[in-house]
Amino acid sequence: MAAPEVSVTAIRVPVTAWLIVAFALLAVFVLLQLNSTAFAEQIHEFTHDGRHALGVPCH
Amino acid sequence: MTPSTLGAVLRRAALAGLFAGLAAALAALLVVEPRIDDALAIEAARSTSDEEPLFGRATQVFGGMVAAVAVAVCLALVVGVVFARVRHRLPATTDFGRAALLAFLGFTTFALLPALKYPANPPGVGDPDTVTERTVQYLTLIAAAVAVTWLAFLVHDRLAARPWPPAYRAAVGVAVAAVGYTALLMTWPASPDSVPADIPAALLWDFRLASLAELAALWTVFGLGFGLLLTPRRIPAATMA
Image (cartoon, rainbow over all chains, first blue to last red; front, side, top):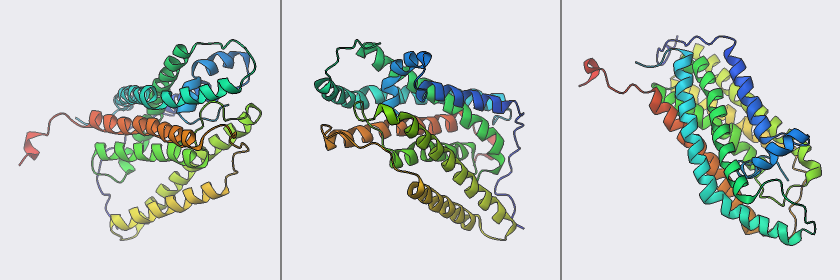
């Protein structure tokens, strides 16, 4: 039986923490991926250089 | 004290993400923007419309830097939650090592693999009609790369039942990831776009390298910053030689 390499205590992660993950990913999506809606056009144009620079598909 | 609550981990991740975003924004300004200017000059020479742009160039340069900071903080929070969830299972001996490992995997899955399959393009290259298709390709590749990374850890953990040295398990895990990533790059569909003839190959190469430099700055500063912030400031006196 192999012993665990290092013992550190597990950090308690409540299920709600994954809401933070979902929200953060949604924010990245809105900032970088969203196309083709009127609301998106403002964000798209504002972050346009950032989209290209971060390698996200764009035109 | 090493942080032992989710909140303490997330505060450190967010701060490291802020620094990472500032580093990426600086890289954007110094390395990427000159190449965007070159591409915009080509686009302008091509254009026959005199449509007024929504924002001026200075605003867009600023917007690109704001986007880099915002994206870095968001990705940092994602990695922060993942770190808290898997810290006790990561194969490293310090929190610095664990943070560096996660940041390296973040760079590989979120930046390097998509950059290899769908390299960044400056303005004036992408076809507006295919942007949704290209976005789906790009995002599904990232999702699949995350799944492969997870699979590699799953295999690594399963091997814990065997009386192997940790290095053997690590090697198998890395091999699973490498084969999996290669399979993804080979099976995912090619971008439907072709590069317009008036875009010089040198500009394309320089832009792609600059884009990768910005992403590397983001993930490197995040990994180092997160790892350092997780490290206790003083070595407990009892453990010093």
